[in-house]
View 1 (cartoon, rainbow, N blue to C red):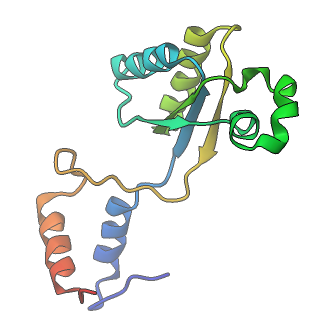
View 2 (spheres, rainbow, N blue to C red):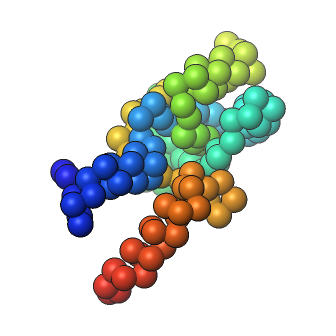
Length: 153
């Protein structure tokens, strides 16, 4: 897709490069039963300048089947880890940060933790933050002007 407008393709390509920061980012996902270990991972990430983590409460398949659907109560023995909630840590990380997240999680959790860690590719990524602006002031003003001119629903 070409963003050509007013014959200034170079300016539009630079704007796209500055606003679309998807290259080299992945989602680090850590799902654990032990909230204290998840919190320790989060704090270790902050100590290594990895920010922007989000923690979500979760319920596993075994917990839902064994506690919420009476027909499946007989399966309780097949899901011994179904007791208790799960906690999900999501972090959008660069490739370097992702490796560090895995190392920190493995070191903190050890072999006795219940859970999983994995990464997912991120196709597009944009950060919305008044504190961390990736725009130069002139480009930021242009983007603001363009958004004001856009029709509102």
